[in-house]
Structure formats: C-alpha cells, structure tokens
Amino acid sequence: MKSRLTLLLLAAHAGTALAQYKCTAADGSITFQQTPCFGARSEEKLNVVPNGHPPAASGVVPPAVIVQTAASASVGKVETNIDKKMLASYERQHQRDALEQKLKAAQDDKAQRLASKAEATAAARRQFGDDPVNAQALKDAIVSINRRYDALAELDDSRIKSAQSTLDAWDKVQTAAARAAANPASK
Figure 1 (cartoon, helix red, strand yellow):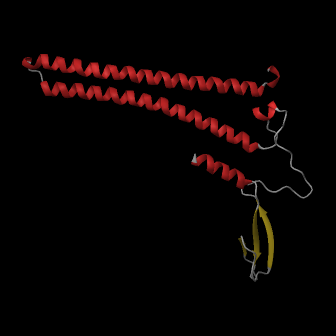
Figure 2 (figure 1 turned 90 degrees about the vertical axis):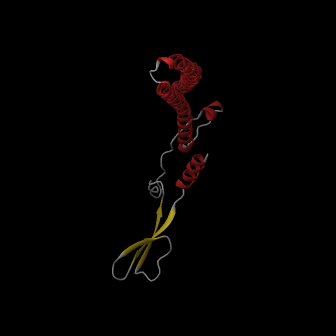
Figure 3 (figure 1 turned 120 degrees about the horizontal axis):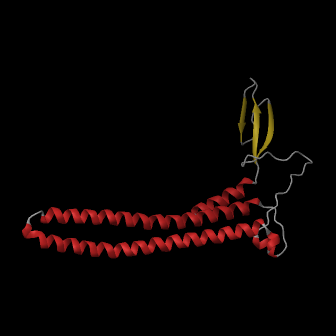
C-alpha cells in the first residue's frame, strides 16, 4: 500500500515544474538555487521538470500520448494520460509477484519439512543406535516419523498445486486481456 501511495505521489509531482534560479556572481561563478538570487550580477529563472522531460518550446504543442483503457473504451473515450497505464502495469506486476511469493513459500515449506524429516530420522538412529535390542523401537520411531511427515508432505503438495494453478490461471487471464487489448477488432 505504501509503494502504491509513493508511486501516485511521484506521478502527481512529475508533471509540475520547479522554479530554479541560475545566479552569476560578480566574479563569474555560477550557482543554482531555488530562491531568487541576492546580490548577484545576473539572475535567470529556469523551469525544471522533475521527471527529466524539458518543457515544450513556446508555441509548440507536444503530441498527445493516447492510452485507451478498458473502462474508457467501453464509453468510447480516449485518454491522454500514460500514468494510468503505467500504474495498471505496476499493479499487475505487484499482483503476480504476490502469487509467485505464495508458490515459493509453499515450495520452501516443503523443502524445509523434508530436511526436518531427514534430521528426525537421523536423530532416531542416533538415539537407538545399531543395538538389536532397540531394533523394534527404532523401526517404530521411523514409522511414526514417516507417517507424520508424509501427511505434512501431502498438505505441502496440495498448497503447491493450488498456488501453481492460481498463478497459471492469473497468467492465462492476463494473456487473454493483453490479446484483446492488442486486437480490439476481434471483439
């Protein structure tokens, strides 16, 4: 949520120009500052655009960037704001990243559980050793460990399968939406 707010604030700020002053001192040194020059030989007011795009020359109208979103297409409206498209792209990537993180977390949990199972089995072998008197106790301990971790492995597999199918379905929907946006005549 914070990143979304930051992005919106940066996008809103990007279109506003900041006043800067170029000050030339009596000795010829040049400084740039945000306040008017005091006691300088000359002062020049500059308009600086924070997003790096220079302001248009006087009398020149910059070409409009045309973006048609699904919402604007449904009402026949063409928008000239590229920020909406960028924000939507960012939001889609954020959603996909969250789905990938869920899948990776499920896979990591499974790997960690497999390592824990191996550690528990090794601990049981150390505890009961190779003594034939403890053979049945070792066998029972290993069976108990296997049952416990096999049940957990089924849950892990279910989580991985669910997360993978959710990610695949999301990708399929996004691919279909991209195709529809690229080829509006086929609707």
